[in-house]
Each structure stands twice: as C-alpha cells, then as structure tokens.
Length: 298
Image 1: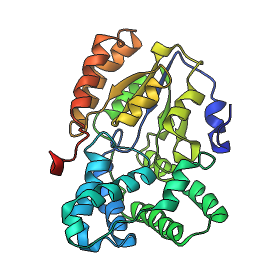
Image 2: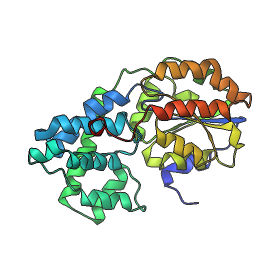
Image 3: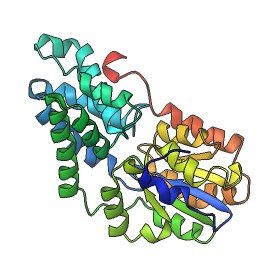
C-alpha cells in the first residue's frame, strides 16, 4: 500500500484499545472554521487573485463553498477553483468586467495524483512545472497560513469536546483526522492541552482523510468499533470509504451536537448500539443543513 512518508505513523499505529475514534479539527473540535475562512482565507483570496472589484461576491462564494454547502471542509485547492467557477457564472461579476482566474495550472496540480494536495505538494509541482500562476498560488497559500498563525489563537475547543475525550481515554484509540496543515493542528491541540488524548495528529501532509482512516483503523478494528466525528460531508465520505461509523457535528449547532455526543451517542457507540436507525437519523439531519445550490441561485 503506497502512502506519503509522513503518514507512516498512521500505518504503524497498533491497536491498544478495543475502539477507534477519528476526530476532525476545524469546525468540529474547534470553532475555527468561521475565523479561518472569513478573516484568513477570503482576504488572501481577494488580495492575491485581484478580486477587489468583486470582493462582495467573492466573499459570498467563498463562504458558501467552505462554510455553508455540501463542499464544506474540502481541501483548499479545489475549494479555490470552485469559488472562481461560481464567480464566473454570476451576472454581477460579468457586468463589472471582471474575469476570475481560469487557474489552468492549479487544475493540473489537482488532477495529478502523484502530488499531495498540500503546500509541500504544490512546491514540488512548481519545481517541475514553473509558472507565474503557480507563483501566485504559492503566495496565496502561504499567505493564508501566515494569517492563520497570526490571528487564530486563543480559541478553545467546543464545550463537551474535552469532556468527551477524557471519557473515551482508556476506552478508544483516538487520532486527529484533518485536511488542515499539521503545524496549525499541532499548535491548536497543544495550546489547549488536548493533544495527549490522541495518539496521532494527522493533517494534509499525511494525505486525505480517507487515507488516514484506512491506514490507522481499517482492518485493525471491527467496522462497528470505528467512528469518525466530523462536521463536513467529506468526513462522512471518508468514514464510509472505510466501512466506519459517522457522528456528525452539525454546522451552527456544534455545542448541541457535542453535548448529545457526550450524553448519549458515545455511550451507544461503546455499547454496540450506534449503527442503524440511530446513526441514520443523525446523518439525515446533518445532510439537510448543507445545500448544493448557492442562495443567489435559489
């Protein structure tokens, strides 16, 4: 099985307990999605891709893709392209004479499976395919990371995250499963003293979330003893790709979701009573919160 060298700790993770829990970070364990996208990603997108004349519409498109749609939580590179594509379709943007980037070189990077969709992957791709568009892409992605490091701190985990981790400690092997760069994940989990609860912190450098779960859990635990906790459809897909169970943290209802996990869901999981109608009802509620069609097209 091939995987990035950085993912070796996941592949070598040996079960110590009977259950396994993977936990997403941004927007799931931490209330960081809003501040990261609204204060870090979007300003850098407007700046580096020269979208100042349509900044209002760029903000709307980026918030829809990254926060309020079925694409919530996807990797930053396809999310960026989706923002450009949504802008290209808006009559208001056309009327202002603004042409969002075609981003052909970024599309080639995304389509090339030999490069991880991380900053390291982009840098490696740039070395082989130097191009001015990729220089802008590099300035954008490093600018985002610098802004995140500058302003995103002091945000505690959602209520009942720490309590849930503490209860599950000694009952389930736990890891972080995220598309966020490792540096930011490690800093946030250590800042709030919850890193000791997890055995591995896996970010974008370790591959996609489905790979994290496949390497760390699939075949090592019974399927009904593997649970992914996430706030985005991509987390659900990663769980299903590995025959794992899924617990949704509902966007806009995060505190309520974590309290319900602490009060009931995790006990059902440990008792073998989670799969089936109980899980299905939770996922149905989750799905209804994330539309496919942007509000300006409804």
